[in-house]
Each structure stands twice: as C-alpha cells, then as structure tokens.
Length: 177
Image 1 (spheres, helix red, strand yellow):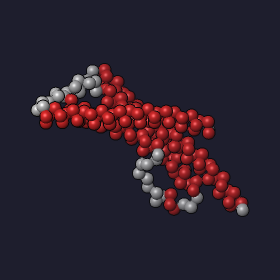
Image 2 (cartoon, one colour):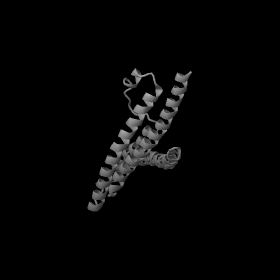
Image 3 (tube, helix red, strand yellow):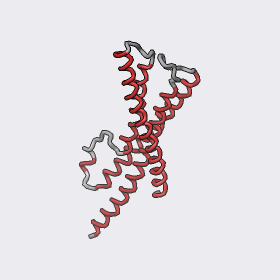
Image 4 (cartoon, rainbow, N blue to C red):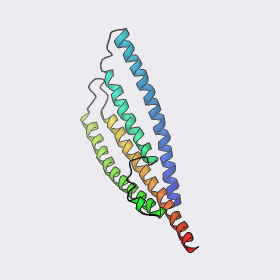
C-alpha cells in the first residue's frame, strides 16, 4: 500500500508543479493584458476589440487550477463536531479517509461529465464572442482541475489510511502498558 501511495503522491507532485507554472504564467498574462487595456483605453482612447473578455476567462481558469491545491492540503471546510466526540485519533483519520473517498467519488463523476462537455463543445466548434478562442479549451481546464482534485483526494485517503493504521498500532501499545 505504501508503494501505491508513493506513486500517487509522485504523480500528484508532478501535476502540482505543472499547475503552479501554468498559474504563474496566467497571472503574468492577466497583469500584462490589463496594463495594455488601460493604456489603449485611457491613453490612446481606443478599444482592443474583444480582448476585454480574456482576463475574465483567465481568472476563471486560475480558480480551477488553484482549487486542487486546497484538496492537496486538505484545506476544505470540515465539520469536526463528530470527530471531537471520540478520543481515539484513528477515528478522526477514519472520517478523513471516508471524506476523501467521497470527494474522490464525486469528482470522478464530475470529471466524466466535464469530459463529455468538452467533447460536445469541441464537436460544435463554439468560440468566445470577442476573441474567437475555442470555448472547449476553457472547459478542458475545468476537466483538468477535476482530475487533479480526484488525484489529491485519493492521495490524501491513502495518506490518512496509513496514518490511521499507525494510530491504531500506537493506541494498541498504549493500552497494553
């Protein structure tokens, strides 16, 4: 099980590096685009014609690229009232494993739907109104974000499962003494 956890974690780290690079590039592009737009609009009194929509799309892409990082660090909202009723640390880990598996299952379903939507928008050839960029590209990033959340949820479930087994072993030793 540790070998599987290491493989999933290595894959997640590779995707994480790619995502951080893409997000950094996206923020730089948005920054430069806004500067150019302000210059053209207020200095040259001209519009760039349709480019105004791009920062909105890029910011939305950044959200879907950043969302998996919350899953990676397990920074999502939790309800700790149930786990606080138990003194055993392994119970908290069991709830984390369960919540990670539920999240992974939900994201697998969402990923399938997102992929199907990408196929449909690709097939129809829809483009953005102003810049005529194929809209499926933006939807593909949503699909990528869903895959990343799924990978991190599985990695976290395995990590918490290993920690839970360790907690059970430690508590068993403590009870024996």
